[in-house]
Amino acid sequence: MTGFDLPSYLAERRAAVDRALEASLPGENVPPATIHKAMRYSVFAGGKRLRPILVIAGAEAVGGSMERVMPTACALECIHTYSLIHDDLPAMDDDDFRRGRPTSHKVFGEAVAILAGDGLLTHAFRLIADNGAVLPDPRGLRDVIAEIADAAGTLGMVGGQVVDIESEGQKISAEMLEYIHTHKTAALIRAALTSGARLAGASPAALGAVRAAGGHLGLAFQIVDDILDVEGSLAELGKTAGSDRRKRKATYPDHHGLEASRIRAKTLIEEAKAALAPLGPAAAPICALADFVLERRS
Amino acid sequence: MTGFDLPSYLAERRAAVDRALEASLPGENVPPATIHKAMRYSVFAGGKRLRPILVIAGAEAVGGSMERVMPTACALECIHTYSLIHDDLPAMDDDDFRRGRPTSHKVFGEAVAILAGDGLLTHAFRLIADNGAVLPDPRGLRDVIAEIADAAGTLGMVGGQVVDIESEGQKISAEMLEYIHTHKTAALIRAALTSGARLAGASPAALGAVRAAGGHLGLAFQIVDDILDVEGSLAELGKTAGSDRRKRKATYPDHHGLEASRIRAKTLIEEAKAALAPLGPAAAPICALADFVLERRS
Image 1 (cartoon, rainbow over the protein chains, first blue to last red):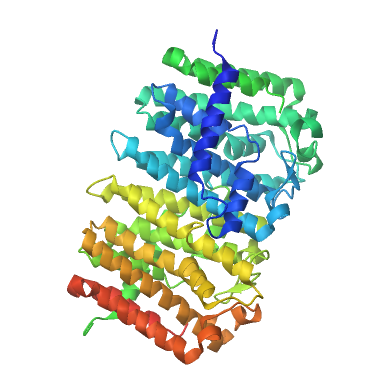
Image 2: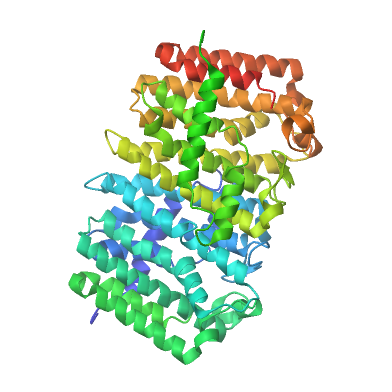
């Protein structure tokens, strides 16, 4: 990691992802304008672009380029954004603000917010399919889609959200909480890394290393999110402070305490970096991102 | 069409589609059980399986087999079902009954209904990707996904639903109504036929014929739906009678009168069959389905 300039790396890739998203999403004037405005409102709401950057870093870790995987990088951001729009709905987490701005349904109404999410999820698979053209063996597209669909669907993110909602206000076990975290958040983060590596033609061994790192990194990300939620303030997070706590959602610190949570996150990040060791310097961006996940304050 | 036994054809294919859906969807006991129960509740609600059967008929029209396209046939039913679940939500059409049974959100709550739709849409793309293995040139998977995603997304079905919702209670032009119909319903029906033909290795000319027929058939289907809605009773439709009218949604007969609507539907079906003429007897199932769409009473 010595000498790796993470801030420049993040700024450059984030700008490239933003340009690609701008070009990929239908314009605000393309009919029906309302839905495209709504999709863009949420996609361009100041996100960190962590998932697309992980797609890119996954490709780079096995010798691939950013350009090669950009459509799938954008697709992961579309999937992430759709999940935020639907999670914020009154029937779900009922959040009025996200990143300091009114949520989609507050601006466009519930119907359009639901449809904006549906539109983004659909658009994501279109983008991934387009990306398949770069694969040396085009049959590999099936594996990329299967991995992302499984991570996003009821055996992954959607499944985690269902259990999260069912558990609200209830006392749940530490095992159940880990189920929610690994499914709701970690699965898609892992799929971001592995899909980038797959599209870049990773060997089975390299893919296994990236997948292991992705699982550790994803869980660490959610634990840090929980820690920030407990510690956080409105100014820092741009959303209602301690909102998980307010809704009596269980957090990792609730179960294990703040100190043990910090230690677990740190250990997971060490494990992620250890898994990537066989890939050598090419994995420096993922390792730096892993440290960033641990140290972030928002 | 002489001698083509449509009732047997429909019964056999519907049973095969039901078996394939049964095998494809996660079981009711697969965790999280709630979401898989909700997905199955709506998928196995007595649908006619028109869209999957059109995928199969599209394949057969160019010499392909049912088995070859079954995953995509199931995917189209998943996409159709997700759209019904989301359309029925309180924020959208607010329907309590569908096919005579309580809608998903009445049984499982709004949060699970939204997520069941999300899960079905995601599962659909997984199924289509799996189906790509049958393609002689695996790069064709990109075209199949692009066509279905465009038909289902904001330039197709989702776009039609947005305009439909925005138009509720308003006076809209005949052109706008046709926009809603071609996008909300016809696009996915056309994509069902063309994706079946594509997966079966259709020539460009054959694909063009199937696509043209699909567009006519899809619009005819929605016009007949409007006619039935105006004429319909609770017993016939299994949902609240005249529900589009009750919500002051514009229908084709509102704009053109019942008689002109019947003539337009009939003309479209004739055009669909004419487009299929070059395919010869292989297109008999689609032609019989077209007649069925025109003559159906529910």
